[in-house]
Image 1 (cartoon, helix red, strand yellow):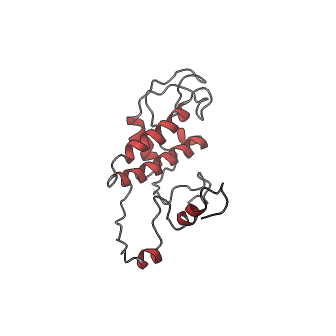
Image 2: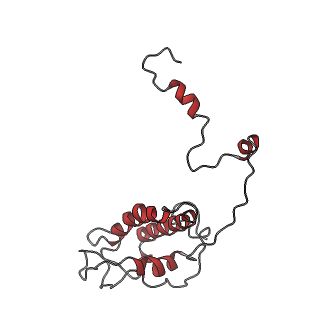
Image 3: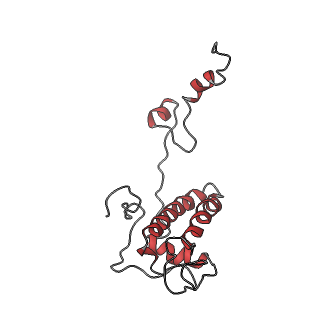
Length: 172
């Protein structure tokens, strides 16, 4: 107990230092010390092989919005969305987090609902913003989201996706 009458958390801070943050697995030394055996986790392959497949086969058919025919207004989408760095960044974040939520949803139902509410509902309106979104200057109407595959299209994995888009490494 601290002598300071305004130190409300002094003793609590010492106890909190020994607790692992939520969602973080304790290290192997800590689990061995308490006799917990780590289980082998089976790696689940991604549902969508790459970012383009995710956008064209999941986001495109699932997200339905009335798109504007006039450049610079309403909701805009370019079938060549992959030409816009911000669109690629946001799509990549959505794809990677979707795959993680899908796997976690197998044991913790509600993860996909949370993904829809926290990730898709955040990024899709920004992507479609026809006034100042990344594709606001695109020409021509699109009836649905999704679109074309880039030239020289190749399959990317979750681990080998172009990390330069996320600023975490060099392109593969």
